[in-house]
Length: 150
Image 1 (tube, one colour):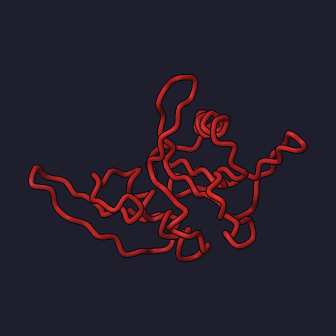
Image 2: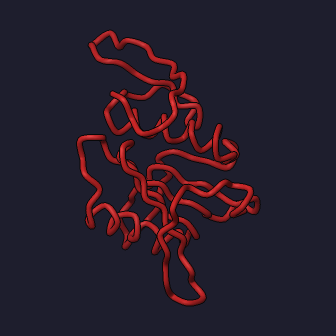
C-alpha cells in the first residue's frame, strides 16, 4: 500500500504458514507484517533517514505499566540521557486518526512524560509538543528534526 511517507527498503520473508514477516531493525527480528507494522517500519525509516533520529535511542513495542496494567507504546524515542522524548502511535492506513487515538497516546504519556507525541496511520500524521511548564500543548506543522529537539 502506498503511504504518505518516503519509500524505503524493507526486508520481507514469506511465512511457511502463509503471509509475510518484515525485519524490524529496532527489535532485531522478523515480525508479522500487518498493515500497522507496514506503517511502523516506514515511519521509523523516515525518522532515522530524514529526521536524523538515532536508531540506538529508539525502541518499538516498549512496555510500560499504566494503572497496574501492562501496555506497549508503538515507538519510543529517548533523549541523549535516556529519558522519553517522543512517543509515536501507529494505526493501519484504513484506520482513521480519531480522538480515541489521541486519548490512547496521552494515557501512555501520563506514565512516560515525553515532550513530543506523534500519531500516524501512514497517510495522515500529527505531531504535538507538550509544554509541562505551562500545562499546554501545540500541534506542529511537521515532524521536527531530532537535532532541533534533543
